Length: 216
Image (tube, rainbow, N blue to C red; front, side, top):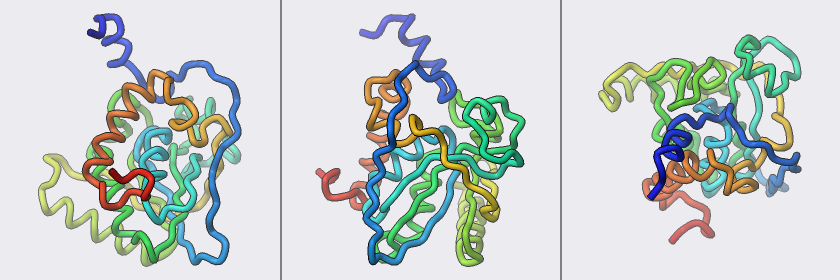
């Protein structure tokens, strides 16, 4: 049984309260040679969580954690955490549209975080954790806007969806140690008690969309 002190520490876990760990080089497999790809940049809370989710999807070729939407060039993680750069923690997803559609990516996006909380996901609080879609084309904008409107009308959530839909104006790759974070740090407390349970739920709901090595 987990003791009360452990329960309290788990409850208070947030993306910004990382344990110390060595700098690690990102392990991002690129299978994009001779493949027509598309890209979308998504903010849905801590990028460690979002990255871990989208890495599992069949048709997703590359996932990169970074910062978008702010006014400071080449921000550091520490600057973004100070909450005055305007940046959002985002995950940039490069995918093969013949294997997974933009609509399907949006379905995963909206079902794996709470899009009704302003500047917050769980215990992660601040403008860097706001829900956002940074689109790369008018088509992506139209699809995302229509999807958001329909979800609001459906009453899927008791509160209005606050996800912003914005053109991608900048994307700065986060520090190496943020890349492939969950896979590189499975025993880190935030990974064990926040990301792992989220992944388990996601994998059950989207079982048919997982890469073959993740399917049961």
